Structure formats: structure tokens, C-alpha cells
Length: 391
Image 1: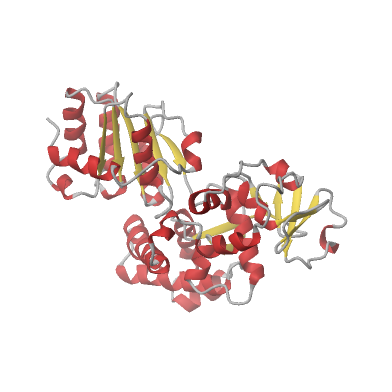
Image 2: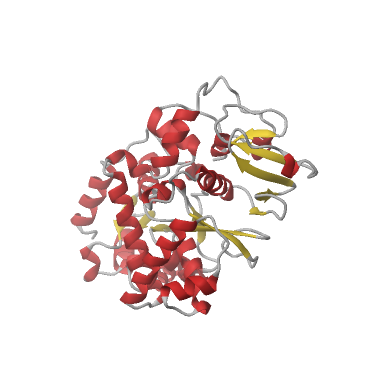
């Protein structure tokens, strides 16, 4: 029999969410699959999305939502919960914070193989452990990755301004309807500062964000990589170096000297930080976390983190490039350009302010100037904010 404490916890959590706004990822997930993993950085809204899905499917599912970091699991196993749940007619088991549970991938395999009628949906704040466990769940779990709010989502969630998702071709072709959002720039400035994380409307935003940075760098990554406490602190110092300089081409030797570590460990440190949603790495070919391309630039992951870490100042150029890379990488294969800033498919992009000239892309076929501080574009000139409408 399912423990009533688990049922009470699920009812309590469902009572905290509504369906007024649902993240973009919901419609891209194939919820009919038997095992789904939803991964991403801390604070991007994975738990809320799962709870919203339960509300949507209440009439068709016998669902149970549990959080693997609850004290209940100090004396009980996920296998036990799943077995009892099946006996009571359960069809869908939702497990949050799965990375907090020891041997989670082994037990998920056992549940999957032992209960073929049960659907299992799990999430975790640390993309690191989930990626490591994916090898054990090959041919079983389908993994989905989720990042923070797009500018389009921010407009809907915070200001009730609904805009359609535009394709990449629509945006580079300047086909965004100006009537939908007549004056985008003031709202765009707000988004750059505190619109990427859904929890920003709960107050004390930068304090909460600093806690996420600390937890990720000093707990999540060290646990995953079996680092010492002192090494975890060095990751925080490494993040400070990134924040002061990003976007920058990494000089591993000088960074290693500053941290007092071997140069050889730095590529791994950067990869851990990228997977955990702290930084982005722009490569020279075939983008994505599994890319073997050479890292050409290291970015702070998103503009909100730049503000939180004090990496804005007067250098708006860094902010603009960070926004462009962050918003395009989830939909497009964004790589570095030898002639300019970015390449997506056959298109080359130079990012700058409204006075940015076009000399750098004059001789480049399908070259574009992406300008900040303009509302609408024409020809080769594309407004920066419109790249926030891709998802």
C-alpha cells in the first residue's frame, strides 16, 4: 500500500502549480514513451513542468509524484514504491530530483524491466549525474534537455504578452510581426537582467541565483567528479575568472596558474560547468555538448548570470553575444565564425549595437548584422531581441 505521506506530498505540490503558463518543452516531449528523463540546470522549471503535466492528465492517469531527496527514501527504495504503486493500479510514476538517490539508474532499470505497464518520468537538477547514468539506461530512457526562459516565454509568463514561436528563417528574414509587440526594447532590457529563470518573480532573485551557483559548483560538480572540497572551491574561483572575462578564448595555461591546478584538468572542469548550466562553450564545428570541435570562446551561460556575477559593467558587447548564443543554441547548431561572431548553417552573424557597420560581412554570402537597440530590421540587419522568439 502506498504510504499516505507520499500521497499527501503529491497533493501539496500539485496545489502549488497552475496551468496559466506552461514551458515550451512540454509540447516537444513524447509523453507516451515508457521512460522519459528531463534534465537541465538548476532553477529552469523542470519540477513545475512535470507537475503541470500531471494536472493535465489527471483524468487519464493514475499518477504518483515523489521527490527522491525526501527523507522517506532513507528507509525505502524506489523499487518498493513502484511495486506497491502497481498493485494499486498505478500507471505513471514521476520521480523528481532523481540524482539525489543512490544507484538511481540501477533501480530505474529494475522498475522498467519488472513492470512493463508502468510509465516512468524522472527529472534532476544536476545534468551531470543524469548524463552519467544514461549509459545504464540505454535503449530504455529517452532524455530531454531543458534550458531557461526564452524572451518570448518571459513576455508571456511575466507580462501576459503572447507571441508565436518564429522559425530561424522567419527571424533572419525579418518576418516578425511588428504589431504584436510595438515597443520591445524596455521589456528586453528587463529580460536580460532577470528574465531567464522562472523563479525571478518570487523575490530576492539574485540571492537565490547566487545559491544556485554555489550549490552547483561546490556540491553538484564535486559529487559527480569525486572532487575534494578544496577543488570544489577552485571551481567557484574558476567561475569568477570566467565572469570577469567572458566571452573569451580560453588560455588554459594562464588559468591553471591562477588556480594552482594542472592545465590538463581544465577542459574537464569547463565541460562539467557547461553541462551544469553555468557556462556555454562555442566550438568551431558541430555544436553541442558531445562535440569534438575546438572551443573558441567561453561564455557565462546566460545574461542573468552575468548580472549576478558582476560581469556586465559597460561592456554591452559581451551581453549581446551571450544572449545570442544562449537563445540560438537550443534550436540551432551555433558554431564560431572565422570571419565574424557566429555561424548557423549557411548564415554568418556579426553582433553589435545599433551603430554597428556591415563591413565585416560585406563579402560573406548570407551574412547578417544583428543589432541591439533597434526595434525592427530590414535587409541584412536583424534586431537582436527577435532571436529570443525561437522557442
